[in-house]
Length: 535
Image: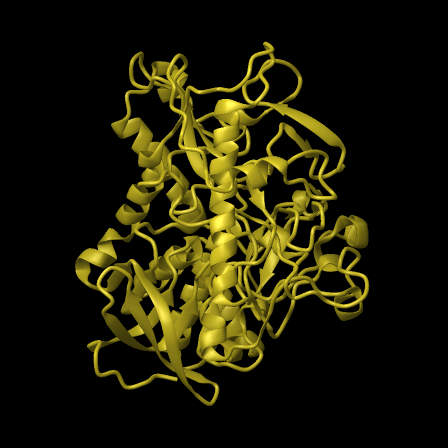
């Protein structure tokens, strides 16, 4: 509950819609709601909007058909804006400039591996018509602190300016939680679940045997950017926890954490990596490369730049929410130390194919991620708190093992589509990868409607999935679609003097809303030819 304060001055603000969290979903929600003429306040605790793509420095994980369909129109505009930025502002070679589907980094994880600073610029440009007009107010470096509720309604939230300590009381008709961990849910009393469900709860093939484990969550990763200046010594100071990470080995892992060994995520076969491509082994350097120097005229880049988001810096020693603050801080620091320790190991002790030791030329590129220490502004969070929703998306609704030739279960209340494997990284209960095929799926509106609270919706990966299906619904274009549909939904509810629950459960309202979002470029179903194709 809100408390009276005598020391810190509080200032009140009012909007139609308050969005807490500048994730990809938060940005998409703000864009949709502002486009519909609503007054919107968007807050973000880091300096950058864009979540996974920016403050977490993760190039986009997308479906195979993303260039032509499989996302909303505005997400494609974001992607087009990234390419246009490079072609307008960067000295590309003629070959790169003539490449219609330019991949700036030529990393093989994505068709659009690019610098996070470019995404920041494109997002700011997309939002500028609404920020310049005053319809959209954006406050970065603001974090939610508390909330007040009355019955099934959220009345206000308080956010703190992380630089000044000042507080703002935000009042609105609707609130959207677009934070990476679902931080608004516990503060507003919204019912939610965390961690891994049990088979007896969900009936899912890959759910836990026995009891559910609310603290069994996917690993997080503290990403960073590096380049390679051969002949230089860019070795960082030895991290405080280096000796721990040098000797740490999980029971399920094929070797020490600081090694070139990992498991194949799908087959769990042991595999060995190399840093640079030298043979048939998996090159980590090429995986998430965001700048290929060969795409630019001579002298522009001294080296490629790549993002280190690799098996070796997945942190699974404990969760970073739903535990005491002391433990949260311990695990956040542990994730940072693991990432720095892996870099130091690569610089000083990593075996090279030529028989030598270490790559001292590896250089931490703090400028790329916008921080002083060189690590991303925020850890890559793969799994959030998830609302208890009117409809929960279960594994057997989207799995080819369960659905066969029928394709994914059709949802009459679809508000978008997506596709990715049910890709779960090693978890905080020391479980290995769970990575299974998934059919092209829809996003049901019921998964965005809390079971009780009326005016708060998820706008990120905190919708009504399970631990298993979250693995497919957490990726960049799906998260954007979730946020965009949530933004359109609350704007529609305000315009029609109704509420999101009624829109879902009234056939006429639902059809009208679906027509509305389709007219704004939200795809509601996949082309028929793709519906039975798993990945």
